Amino acid sequence: MEQTIKIGKSPTLKASCQQCSLSNLCLPLAVSDQDLARLEDVVQQGRIYNRGDYVFEQNAPFRSCFAVRSGAIKTSIVTENGDEQVTGFFLPGELVGLDSMSGTHYACSAKALERTSVCELPMDHMEELTHKLPGLQHHFFQLMSQEIQSSHQLAMMLSKRTAEERIASLLLSLSSRFQRRKLSATHFNLPMARNDIANFLGLAVETVSRVFTRYQNQGLLKARGRDVELLDMDALHAIAQEASDAPPCR
Amino acid sequence: MEQTIKIGKSPTLKASCQQCSLSNLCLPLAVSDQDLARLEDVVQQGRIYNRGDYVFEQNAPFRSCFAVRSGAIKTSIVTENGDEQVTGFFLPGELVGLDSMSGTHYACSAKALERTSVCELPMDHMEELTHKLPGLQHHFFQLMSQEIQSSHQLAMMLSKRTAEERIASLLLSLSSRFQRRKLSATHFNLPMARNDIANFLGLAVETVSRVFTRYQNQGLLKARGRDVELLDMDALHAIAQEASDAPPCR
DNA sequence: GTACGCATTTGATATGCATCAAATTCGGCA
DNA sequence: TGCCGAATTTGATGCATATCAAATGCGTAC
Image 1 (cartoon, rainbow over the protein chains, first blue to last red):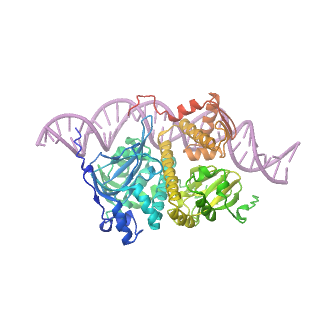
Image 2: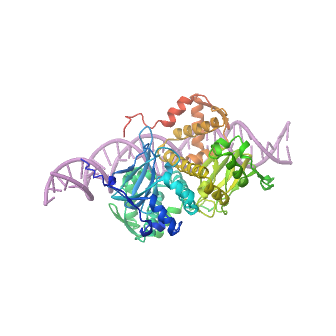
Image 3: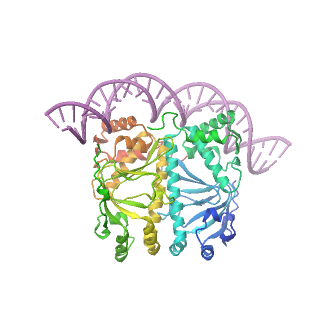
């Protein structure tokens, strides 16, 4: 079936970063007004993808990174033997594709989790621009560095944390990212399926489901499908950070 | 005891990247000769650390990244509750500290695993330089992107692979990195303790030890302490990549 | 050379989570 | 509105690996 209406192929417009409500997330004041104008010459706005559409696929020739305007994207890598690892979820104001800048082909696939609009950043042009604008260059260094950090955090979770801790952490991460966008920090819709959560956190779907119900029984949250309400942020924070109640030092 | 002879504090010399045997790893031909000269004005060479010394510590003010000249470095992050995650091992020709460029303080600690010499790259000066040299900027983007990728690979390992697969992968990774430096790909000394391996791979020390002896019994390798000889690279590759012998598709 | 402490190995047991199986609910579409 | 496949939930069982415990080996300093 899958009647993919490829609006993504519609003519792209010159972006208007100045008026974008996300500009302070996407490119936090890194650039002056006249720099913004130059940026807009390079950035292409208006690509829209439906749920399940690929923004780009692993091993396709690398051209661009993408800034999420609305919706949500998940990235994942697939090994030869076919198993997949979800490497990240990207919400509005966040930049997808930085891990592919070292090669000629995309290192992961990026799939729209819901109807999603993005701005395209052709990286050859962007690199020219970052070369001219030190602030923008610095900003890109920061973004990439942050992504390394968050990936290290993920590694920490995967190797040291229990299922409950991982899920609490993810919920709190999403919460704070919604909050950054002036949305509710306690009541939101998960953009991803349980399956994606499980894969991302290195758990089985069943385990994720069980933890959700457990949390619900404990009154920490209320969840109906993807609709989630965090009822006890303090408890969740406590769970997310606790490892052992043992003495603080090794 | 720990009679730390802080040679690291000795006067640093202007680097001579041109004559460095690692320059093709560290900065692969990214820059012309005259650019190299400028690079050498910024890079400081000659810091030496003894085993166990910190090159930098988590939460200390961020200033510099470090290129390994000889020896080996491990990086790790520590959470409030005190547990540690080794996030990487760095061998000669590799660059440490890229994950800290997004903040004002180091995001991890870097510890010398053996007697180690590094070149210091003060990042404020480096950013001026990358700004002037597009090739160098591009190179830095590549390095950072690679680190994101490898961190994603680590995440994949931690969440999807068995203990045997993880260890085979690490050994092969080290092997190919030694080979890049024209050293033996099959016979080398592990720069890190079993403990570090275990932590990095999200395993218990005992498990690492057991897998080593199992591999030894199967004739895949010979290991006496840190001295390792890989006897059957093909088998190790097979183990590292196999997940299921099931049908190739999901 | 010898002794100490730490790293590594080996063994026995416990457990968190995966896996298998099946019921239930949800969401999209006719 | 009602149906169908997919997503989610719930239950029962097994296993890979952690954990606990202890022996052995090794490097280092005296």
